[in-house]
Length: 119
Image 1: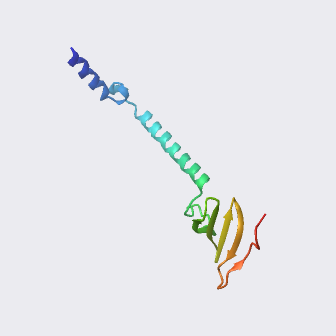
Image 2: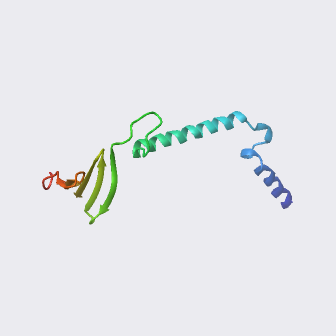
Image 3: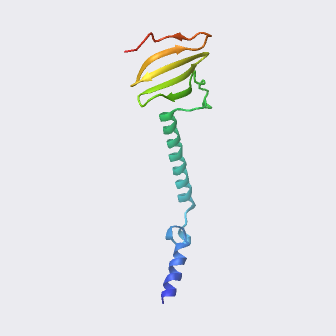
């Protein structure tokens, strides 16, 4: 008796969604596939909107002019950033979300742009 119950449960598990084979609907499968693809595309657009894109898109947007070359954490509150903008390289020192100093390293001689602590 127990063998018949187990065999019947196995046969039911092998059918799609537990439904008999004649209730299988290709239209439902296609609709679910379209729904999953739409959700994946929406997630991709949301992530791109939230985090931006590293590469220019195929829609013809121009490449980014600003690029973070390197970041170095000096202390829990202070960071050093090397930033490239077009042909210029800037060395920024930040503390508590404020720029402490900005130095242009494009030419041979570094040039202080911030002139001390910024408010």
